[in-house]
Length: 77
Image 1 (tube, rainbow, N blue to C red):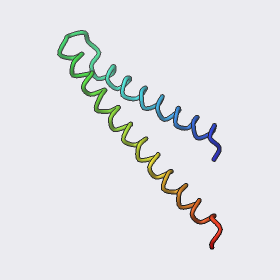
Image 2: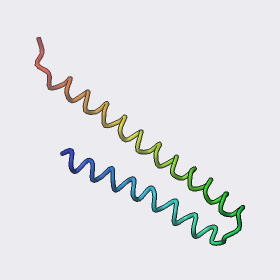
Image 3: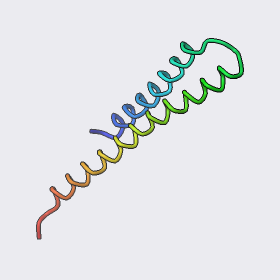
Image 4: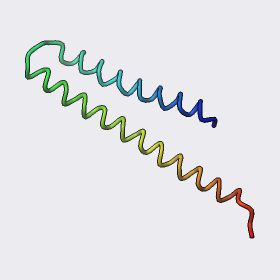
């Protein structure tokens, strides 16, 4: 996979990860009371944290896969 394509995919994940929690919070807590705003912000942080965890897992899995591929392609001595 090329770097540009991989970066575009990651950017898409981040944008989707930001849009889904934000839209969910707006739909669930459409109001302007302070308690709703605080609860909405906390829920947004929780949703975003889960999305960030998925991205970190994606990077770790990709790094392990790339390391294994490099080791496989190294000339044997």
